[in-house]
Length: 493
Ligand code: AMP
Image 1 (cartoon, protein in one colour):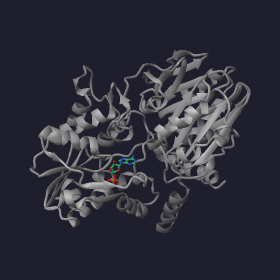
Image 2 (tube, protein in one colour):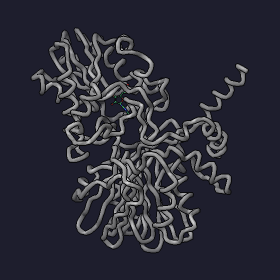
Image 3 (cartoon, helix red, strand yellow):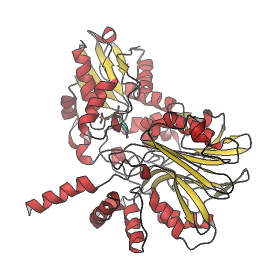
Image 4 (cartoon, helix red, strand yellow):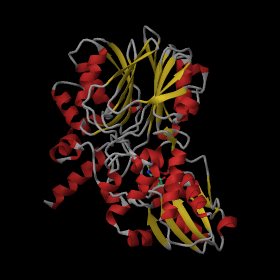
């Protein structure tokens, strides 16, 4: 019996390609140089995914597609590539590196020919029922080409019996569940979709008369487009001939954007709910300072993720703010490395202590979040090795105890430090003198949601509370087993 369990576990590791994608999406309609503008938009969204990037264009007759591994600036920077993408309509996608399959075929946008014409699809987020849907589709004879959950959406659109493309899209989105933003290019329109809770972000901009869709407003800024508004939760925007039509097919739900966009994911200059992520993060730091109970000489941010929170913290308490850590900007985000061993190496490669600023100092070290504890563990040691007197770690969000299933790459509960250890144990593990997390109320106060005349929760905050607005169906019971056998075939293609 024991032996059988062992084999099952081994299979899980090998054949469980991670479907979650954080990703950045972009789309633009009816404008010259659509592919070049899309490349710029994707470049601004590079922080949302660095594994691969792709652009699909439409010139009124034909679709064109180019996909590459790596960064936008290294791949879509030359006329030679952009010339392969003619047309005034374009969508693009940045893929986040997960521990799953890193193959060209998983890089988006995806494209399909349906009986109503071609369609390109770019997707940010994660479907919670894609395995169940995939199983049914395969039983009905569908052949999957990728291991991405986005292909499930494409297959559902292609399979729909409805006549018009928009109706096919509606058919598909009524079946999917999870956190998602979609940008699609049909033969007549640019389409944007945001999930019923608005978990993943999507904004609308305008440049001259042309509409733009993007994951974040920083992608509008880079091309000089004006920010119009966010796509609402559960809203579909259909852009045709420079006219925007809004469709709201779902029963109304209270918007619950993902709190991690505010805490970590969005670029600091992007606007979330009327304020920049930078302002939100400074406020998180300020709340953290209100809850502070130690004296220190300086406040040091973990660059760059803790910068804004540390600044808010220091300003609120009128403390000295020092750049006690120096970051090498030519190394990607820590999480990009696929294994824990390489990930910890990544922290060493990325940061170094600035001895002149920290020697003999009592330090309050501020970061936005603590997940596995890898970053804090390395940095605390680094600061002590460089001569710090005391290191007190302050985290500008509550303890992350629950994994995400809506498109943020969090590890399993087993690997989440705060899910398995209490404050004292975490503090010992990371080697700090003291450790404090922001309270849940403090977090809501900082983001300004507590002032609204609405009931809690107003954010998708399951990381801290375990409250999942959409049931993670694929994670439950039998489907997980089915998922393995189905995907093992798909991932070995
Ligand atoms: P850890 O080192 O595992 O405790 O992770 C915490 C660090 O990773 C913090 O510095 C965060 O800024 C960063 N981080 C948190 N969540 C994510 C995520 N989903 N993807 C990439 N980095 C993250």
